[in-house]
Image 1 (cartoon, rainbow, N blue to C red):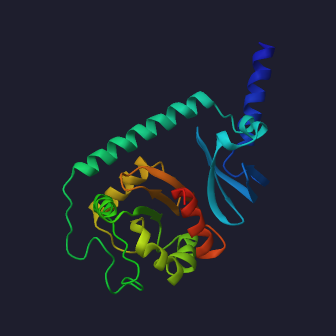
Image 2: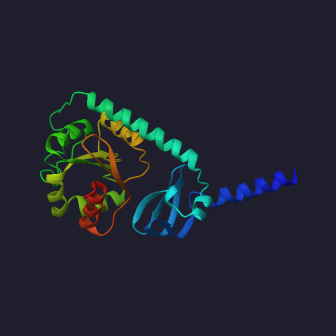
Image 3: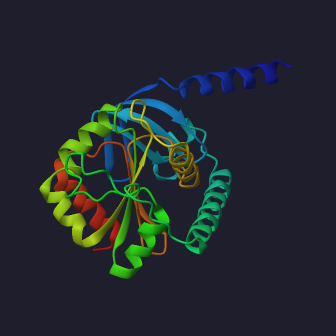
Length: 244
């Protein structure tokens, strides 16, 4: 009995160390180091947090062994979950590709009243974006955002997505899909539900998240949270994802 009590005490202490508001001075994940980390949640595969540069998440499998133990990383459980997510995403993409593409007037791209609409042809239909990407030999960038309320989404939009540097790059390489979760801007229920379904299929848990796909809908890489250092840093990351 005494041994069981000790085990329970150790487990409780470990659980306490991984609470949602845990502060970590520096979290190292591969070649990336994040400063002034505050943990927001931990899943079987990832740890989600805020840091000096905004919001991010890293795979537990990419952490040092001591941190994996700290966050109670279970490789077999994580692998099973990743396989299930990949299977669900693949099925969802196949359903998308089999659907006919419909382009309602003024719905697939932002209205001309939005600043920069002519330069930034963001659309909200992934199926249409994939079809266009295949036709023009492009990639697809998904932007999961809270465009009218979350400061890091607004900041990244202003500092990167709205710049001439990024729009020039995207015009010849990317189909852009905005999956918005606004708090103040009216949004049709069908679009909100479709965006939520895509967030679930891609395992997106925080905004902003940027997911790069090839024209067949396969994920090439993702940026979770604000990416500092302007459009060139983000473009460089997209090029790495694409293998350029």
